[in-house]
Amino acid sequence: MSKCALLASPAAAQQELKVGDAAPDFTLPATDGKTYSRSKDLKGRWVVLGWFPKAFTAG
Image 1 (cartoon, rainbow, N blue to C red):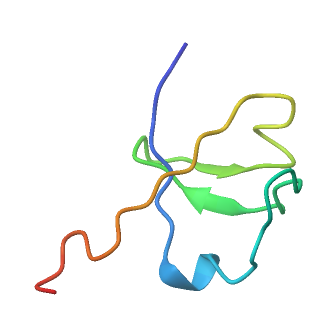
Image 2 (image 1 turned 135 degrees about the horizontal axis):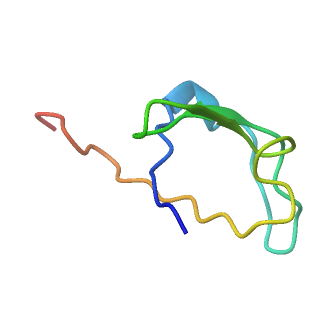
C-alpha cells in the first residue's frame, strides 16, 4: 500500500460537516506529486484528512 499526504489550502475547507455526513468531493495535490479526487481516485477507500492550524506560520 502506498502512502502520501494530500495538501489542502484554507479555501478548500468551506463546508461544515456534521458527524455521519458523507464527505464532499475534493481534488487535492499530494506529496507524491500526483493529484487525487475523492470521487475518482479514492472511491471505496478509507481516507483520513488531517489539518494543523497555524502549521508552518509565524502565528
